[in-house]
Image (cartoon, rainbow, N blue to C red; front, side, top):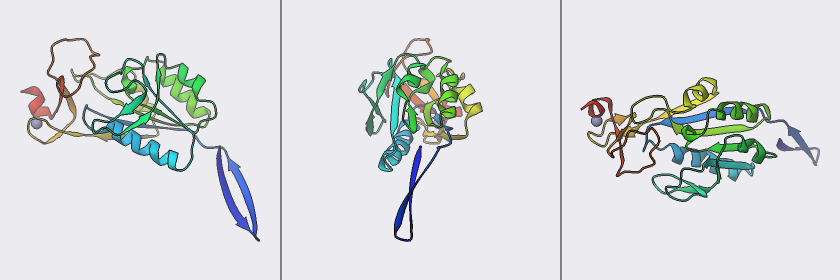
Amino acid sequence: MLTFVTKVNHCFLIHTTLQTGRIEIIYGCMFSGKTKELIRRLKSAKDKHQKTLIVKPQIDDRYDINRIVSHDRHSLGCLPIESSQEIINYSKGVSIVGIDETQFFDDNITAVCQELVSNGIRVIAAGLDMDYKRKPFGAMPQLLSIADQVTKLSANCHSCGQPANYTYRLADGDQQIMLGEKKEYEARCKNCYEK
Ligand code: ZN
């Protein structure tokens, strides 16, 4: 619900209108600034006193389990969630739901986002579009296809400095999900990825 106040003949009139739900996706490789952009949009909403719910998958405990944290250490408090369906339970009365590391959620996250939208909620979800093998990650392809607005971000290639869209794994291990930081991963352009 959005509230507007107008002044007519020295009287203040309060109007309320139902917010239209929408899905915004912020995506790209590691170190492309996805969480930083998510935090920027959520802070802007908080400044307008819009009620927000911020969640991330419970498995992401790299910095702080109760905060979403960008690589340049900006952060906001969040709720760690195990199953995407829990988001619906916590979203009563909120205008905006922010989701970080969306690629780690179960496939039901797409239906959850659609339900949030039908409840008039603005969903802002950030995530990796591809894993370290350049394969589509989790439910991100489905979410990108139903999104109202998408923002693809690039990093700087750690080898040559050109725009980079791929996440290169330095560490051993071939499982799709392996949490890591700059010791384990680099952003690379196509040429440097294939070298
Ligand atoms: Zn490069």
